[in-house]
Length: 84
Image 1 (cartoon, rainbow, N blue to C red):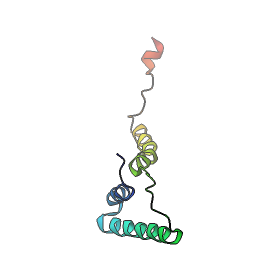
Image 2: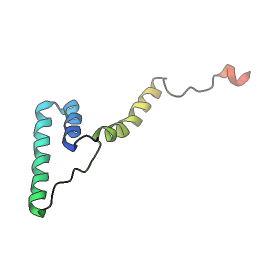
Image 3: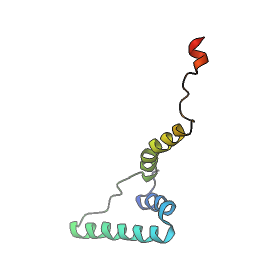
């Protein structure tokens, strides 16, 4: 079963912005969705956006670059291994 759209959105924002701002942002997003549903007179369909996967995909390259900066990246062949 997939996670609801607003739950993942909230959990991602709480980490970065705090609980109060995350609640306001989710409320704002809900109002936008309600407005669109009422104006178009269509049933709501959850888009199924995986915010956790998006966050990992966006932040992973930055984390890998930081690890490489501090010497924890892919191992480079040492000078002794090349000479031998």
